[in-house]
Each structure stands twice: as C-alpha cells, then as structure tokens.
Image 1 (cartoon, helix red, strand yellow):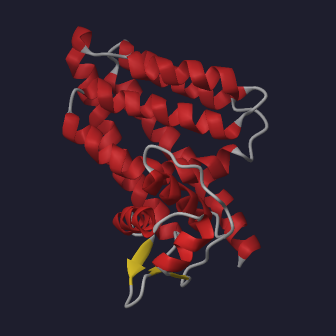
Image 2: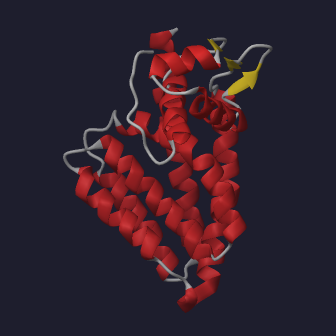
Length: 223
C-alpha cells in the first residue's frame, strides 16, 4: 500500500472503503496482518482514522482482532450467500412495507437512483452506476417508512458497494440492469406486491450468482 489519501469529512470511512475494496478483490489476502502504525504510514494518515476504519471492517467481519492489530478474514462464497440471504429478507420486507404505505410512500430515492443509472449505463461507467444502483435500493428502504430497517441496510450497504463494483466492471452494457430496476419500481408504484417480490427475488438471485462468479475469478487470479 502506498496511497496518499486526501482528507475528507470522514477519513476513517474513506480509508475503510479503500481497504474493503482491496479485501473483496483479494488484493489484501486473508491472514494479512494489519498494524495501525504501518497502515497509517502507508496511507499518510494518523492512527485515529486507521482505528476508525478497522473498527468498521471488524463490524463487517472482514477483519478480526489479534494481539497486535488485526488479521484479515476476507470474504468467502459462504459470506456472500449469507449477505444475500439477509438482504433478501430485509428488502422483501421493505418492498411490502412500501407498498402498504400507498399514497404516503415517497419514491424520490428510487427515482433519483434510476436517473443516475440511466445516465451511466451506456457506455457503462461501472463505479458511478454502482452508486446509483445502491441509491435506488436505499430508496426502497426509505419508502418503507421503517427507520430501523433502513439502519440495518446502511450497515451492510458499504460491503455490497465493494462487491457490486466488481460485477459492474465486467459488463459492457448495464442497460438491462437499469430496465430490471425500473420494472421493480413500477410494480411497487402499482401496489402489486406479488409481482414486486417476485422481481426482487429474481433480481437478487441473479445478482448473487453473478457476484459469486466474478469474485471466484478474481480470487483465483490473486491466489
């Protein structure tokens, strides 16, 4: 590691994002020993942001504490399947809750996400598209009216962002993904719970398999 990070509002979160991306991609392999002083020196930051970053990664089970610093646990296929199982459960609840609110539901977040996805789908700008994709899904949780449900999603959203960046970078045209999201939004707006949950299930199942395939290729190349 030799990056010098530009100070942001939350340097610890930015550092966590950089480390998370590298762990997901296998650039920092499982078993790697991360020592606060060494990481701080590598990224030209103080120990405070490093401590904050490692704390976030511990909550995501990507690292575990050791006697000095932490060791990287990494991300396995089983971890990916667990994350998608959790997401299937909470996002299905978010969809049905949003539909239940009827005219009181706000679709602003979903619509902003869709606009951004449409603008970055063709030619694909993978990193930007991933941000808008997640903005769309965050909009579903916001539309649910359930603040605790949104909080749960926000805890795992950063890890999904790192994984999504991997799969999106392999696509030459993200238009079909954008279309699938519009169909999901439309079914929520129509109050069609059966169709909305069916579309969501198919979307997440497909995303999980694409994610696993992409990560397996990356892990094999870096092992």
